[in-house]
Structures are given as structure tokens and as C-alpha cells.
Length: 366
Image 1 (cartoon, rainbow, N blue to C red):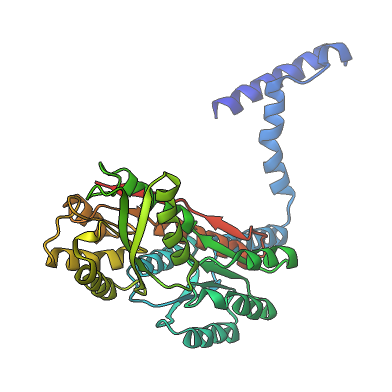
Image 2 (cartoon, rainbow, N blue to C red):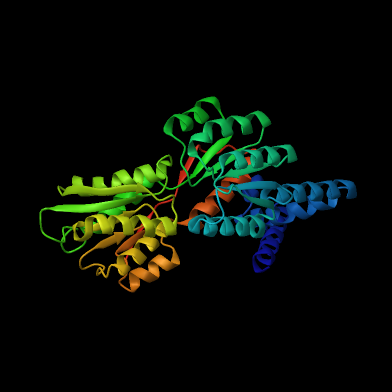
């Protein structure tokens, strides 16, 4: 208000000087900055007064529609999760649904694939027939990505693939063919590398018995899943890249499941006993199962055995604080789910997006 008053006074002075000068252009060569401010401040009211009532209503309606589109209000979003009883994806889907509804006002339907790709494919087809505006897909099988992406593209529905990274060739296809599809997740190679580095940061670099090598077992999530492949490979690669000799004693599929993690670790301990120095688990659920098996054998965590996981579930971080687990790697479900939601809204509104978005992992230790 003070600026406007000052501007009005300044403008009045300029007008007065111009009148006294008899129109001499030298004395009114340029308006003062304050006069410019006045002009800018008064321009909008003049335009408003000039507008007709019908024009004003039309402008208001258009602004409202634009805001609704930007907010996601009225958009229908279908979300397919590979299975609801996965610890990490439970956190992910809950955060995703809440964020989409509360931040964007979108209509969200989330379905459980129950670990069955055929079941999930039917769910995707149903969403397409319902005419959803965008799909967010956590596939049961990453190998189904190309088929699903083509199905969505044929239906004219953009797709956001989450958590399970498609292969590089498929990402390149989306880019070259202009497919309305993108991947949002984290680089699993980084998570595996961080697991290995956590072991290297221990006092004996994982070589507890001092025989010059690290003897380990590997609990693999799903061999078809690229995240499992990369975590398995790069956790060990971090050791060998550091010049550490390794020995794989046992590596089996645990399907990301806590009960299977316990069973596999118990079997490995029964077979190899004290030879096992490190347990690598592709996720925290299997690592939590491994804790039960390790404690049942009265092994001492961080003294005669190490254990690392991925996800940073609350139960895992609590176990780390209690000295019952060596470390884990934060798989940021909040950052990933929010990014997936933001990108989905953009795609639903016809905006161009990148073919891949990644969120960094973070090491978690005591």
C-alpha cells in the first residue's frame, strides 16, 4: 500500500510538472520508476473493469479447470502391486496411495497381484477397459514389461513402472519409439555395492576367521528380478574390487520372503556352520528371517558372523541398533513413491517425461 501511495504521489508530481512546462518534452522525457509502478499497479483493475461479466465467468471457469488438471482432481489412477504381503511394497503402496489422494486429489484404485503374473495381467486389462488415465505398475515378473508396455500403449494409457527395473533395451525402445512409459526406482547396483562396502567397513573387512578370504552365503530374492541380480552381483563385486578374496558357500532363492530367509539360512548354517562369515540378503525381509536362524544357532552377530540386507525396514533398523544385524541399505519408499506419483500425474495430463527416474540408496549402520 505504501508503494502504491508513493507511486500515486510521484505520478501526480510528474503530471503537475508537465502541465507547468507547457508540454516541453525535455521536462517529461521519461516517467519516473514510481510512475511505472503506478501504471503496472493500475493496469489490472482497468482490464477487469473492461471485461464483460460473461468473459469473467469464462476466465474463472478455465482457471478452475487448469488448476484441477494440475492437481490431478478427477484423474483415475490404477495401481498394480505384485503382492500385498511384501514388507517393502506395503510401505510403498500405502505412501503412494496417500500421496496421490491428499496431494493431487486423484481417484486411486490399488490391486494385489498375489505374486501371479496372469492374475496381474487380468487386472491391468480391467483397468484399461475402465478407462483409467494412467497406470502405475509393480510387475510380478519384470520380464513381462515389454508386453505390458505395448498393451498400455495400444490402449493409449501411459504407464509408470516402479520398483522392478526393465532391461536397458526396453528403456531404449520407449525412448526411440516415443512410448508413453517410464520407470521410477533406484539403481540396484548401488544397493549391492553399499552392502559390500558395509562389510568392508567392519574391523576385519568380513574376514572373521583370518584365513584371507570372506566366506559368504547369498539369499536371493527372485533370480528373474533385475534388482536381485544386481544386488547379488554387486555386493560381492564391492569386495573383489577392493582386493578381497571371496568364497561363495551357498546361494539360493528366497523370494523376498522372511520365512524362506529363515529356512535357507538355517539350512546353510547346518551345512557350513562356522565357515559362514557373512550373510548377504537381497532384502530386509529375508535378513530378518536370517536373524532368527542365526540366533537359534547362538552365533554372535558382528563377532563371529555379519548380516546385511536392503530396504531399511523399521524392524531391520531396530535390529541394527540392538546389535542383532550388521547393516542395511535404505530403499527410499517415500522418495520413490512420491516421484512415481508426480510423474504419473504429468503423464496423465499429457506432459512429456523422461524414460527413467532414480532415487539414491543410503547406507544404514549402527
